[in-house]
Length: 370
Picture: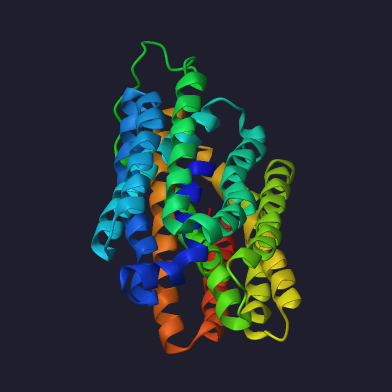
């Protein structure tokens, strides 16, 4: 999960540099994230169901290999079109693995441990922010954004080797070996559909800050690239602490959707001062820490609720979760670029707050009706 997340998030400090190098606008360059998200979600839609049918190990090993190759392609591409194509390949490969990974973890633990187990796995994404993005910003000052992509590809190949070794002993399967074939219709209960919609709202709210926080600091305060490492590390620390706390709450509190709703309301409240109050770098970084902490608390509860389905459809459901999350990232990247061009960063305040409140309303109304 660290490698998959780092393949996209480590581009965040370099959007301005990439735009200049590729001769493209900032808005167009930011939309590379959108291309990645579409491919990620599309691949996960298919791979989740196939992993239920044929086993998860091939997807867990081959997905990272394809991700590494796509990231290498980004590093060597000389024009925007080449970067877009290779980033799309990388996103599809990441989508092949991530839904299967969440399903594999869920199959190995009991329901009341899934919040913590999935929280630790999601923490791999948070570590990409805590370690990967600040380190990328620091390294990028010396080796450029292309060199950083080569480093990410190397880490991804190591991840493929690790997954090959650790999935040698499969999770328990039903008697008879091969799992029965399942359909998307069988997996799509009204509750699952509502949870997936909550995932879109959560990723959209969260993604606006994750994708654009480095650019926000650069544009607002003129922070040099090498100096971004410290603010981004603080931002990412809020993410990983929120994920850990959220995992504990998901397993200890009786209703995971209430936990999710409370966290999203808090994130919505913090989004407004984060993007409207810009009187000092330290204050913006502190607000970013609190915002991302609140948003991260919501994720383990949502994931554990989604994983509480029969094992024979768990890969399908969690694959669809990755697809819905990709729509959230797509909304954040594409709408964020339009908002910057039209209103500037202050336009992010109502947009992020609105996404968060939509997620909270879906959670609370779903609780009353189910």
